[in-house]
Image (cartoon, rainbow, N blue to C red; front, side, top):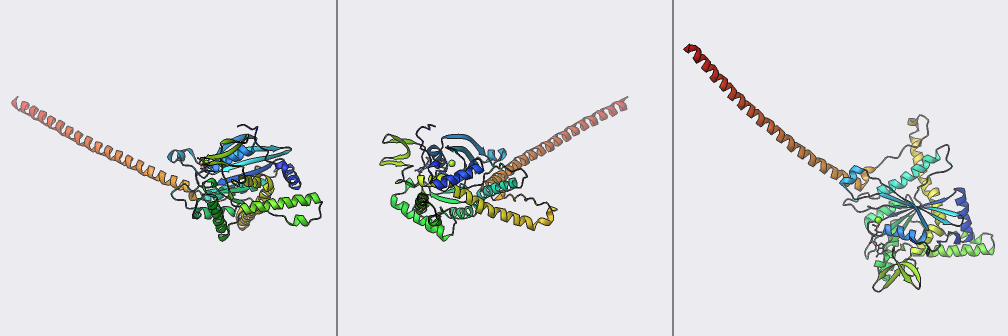
Length: 409
Ligand SMILES: Nc1nc2c(ncn2[C@@H]2O[C@H](COP(=O)(O)OP(=O)(O)O)[C@@H](O)[C@H]2O)c(=O)[nH]1
Ligand SMILES: [Mg+2]
């Protein structure tokens, strides 16, 4: 990947105060980690979005690894995946290091029975809280592995109609556990008017169903604080930017890994017979706004609210359960492992069905083989009986001959 024309994402261009806050926070924990999860039906451009985010943001991709939740036997029976795939990279700017973990979740909504399709996703988020909580209980805990999901970018199918019930309920469930950021996927497939209409529909639906989405905080009280003029102006700019972000939600996004030349500059975009749609052009889509929210202006809000609200809620709930079970723990206050709910996973359900079918067929084949074998034995017995009868007849004949001979002599 060429890195020469990648613009700086601008962590160091943050309003001064926020930049200092980010730096302070980062130094405290050495590096800052941001874990982003993408969720949505197949084909809505999640993988493309991750790659676009990399290519427009990241200077160097360090590692790539997969966390595969399937086991080999099941994979040979059903190759369709609801895996969790994690791509890691480090974003470096000045003295600031941001470790970015992008969590892709292919397979959501792909099944015939999508009942509770959100559960594997919620389970993954809970597992990370649980893992972090266990590390907090260790006596030596200076460096912690942290894969708590700081934001879930939820991809909504662009339509003229309404949102899918499965998406509504999944958004609702995810929003109880993490910062949810809904986006309208492939927004280039809607006309400008359709997009405005659909955005309104999605916003109304979010209000109606009381889905708690992440909203950039305004910090208006900072304006009235007794600070110098520069800081006040910076704060005003930050509030203005936050208001713009809120007005544009849910962000209409476009992903592309193809570059085109515009006025001598290479830009990512999608080429149509009637023109080029540019990923990073604010007049064409909200990709820049989303990237700014995630990696720039609201990076710290996402991290802090995950820690202070979502993780805290999980921790409290877990400790409460633990308190109720205290009598059984012999005074040791360890966190019990969460109950695994694999049977809710539609992928496992379908694999279970496939396994059952496979075993039923195998049993049939074996039964058939056994019957054939039984028949062979019966046939063999009949043959042996016949042989025996024949031999007995022969013996009888010989005995008769002997008797005849004896009588003659
Ligand atoms: N029109 C349009 N197509 C897109 C966009 N993003 C991705 N695609 C295309 O949609 C297809 C599926 O994308 P992919 O990223 O694999 O989707 P995923 O299954 O959600 O990971 C690919 O052919 C992409 O090139 C977009 O913003 N607009
Ligand atoms: Mg994909």
